[in-house]
Image 1 (cartoon, rainbow over the protein chains, first blue to last red):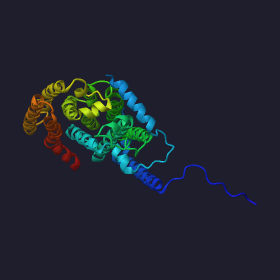
Image 2 (tube, rainbow over the protein chains, first blue to last red; image 1 turned 90 degrees about the vertical axis):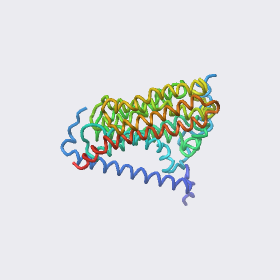
Image 3 (cartoon, each protein chain N blue to C red; image 1 turned 90 degrees about the horizontal axis):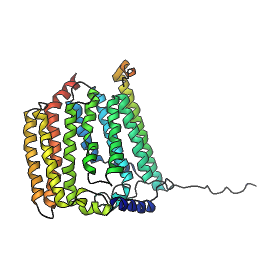
Image 4 (tube, rainbow over the protein chains, first blue to last red; image 1 turned 120 degrees about the vertical axis):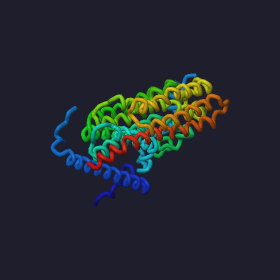
Length: 55
Length: 321
């Protein structure tokens, strides 16, 4: 017979902490998405010049 | 009285009381992180950078101009977050700053540090790759100057902290200019000088009626170290330097007659208010508050006039092209 499962160790988030984490995760996703779109649009704007990088 | 040792002691005490690690899950919201960016300071930075960008000769695609402003805004916000990370101990004992996210316990110091460093990296690299590396390098130097030279070194060690540290706030129009031209020129240095010499009278006027706050936090602001009378003299001295620099763009033919009129009239008001601060006996609250409030309007009017007079036409032509 299996032993009863040990209670999971570690930190268990409260509802408020879960909500805060979720809102932060969404904000990070949106910011990264915006960065990708910005790089895409700037690549279109620059055209072939995007490969020219004078220091 | 040693401000350095007093500050260190205070810092140690607050550090001991607060959790510097990540062991406890965070309750910080997106709003708390936005507060770390000092949005009000950021708006002034964006505005002065926009002026630098708009008055610069040459052309820049509107999307690139938007990208440059975005990166400058994020870079300014990142340096604000780094400042709040390092200054959490002194912020906690000053009424003006006690409710900031780190001293209020909403964001942990480690989170603020990671946030500031990450945003700094993204802002500098994005500006460098998408616009140009001169602007990117200037932005990197500005963040370094504000976070390290001003916040970590000057602020707690010398009453000249905001004189030298004011350079950090003066760089944005220069970065905007460099985003368009890829270089630094006399005109952009002039825009830098206006903000640089505007900073001491602006902050010392604030410090005059917040002296107790700064003294309690162990910050050697000029009124705390040199006293009230000396600070008022210094305010007048820097205003006397500032006003000619404010008029200089017109005098040198870089701006038109409208700017000339605005800079002369507002400069005269600045001088009058600085003289009133000098003459008023203790407490200098009212005169100092008036100067502090008007100094913000003064800088805004100078840059807004420059933007409308010189920059707006050029900006519209670029957008239409």
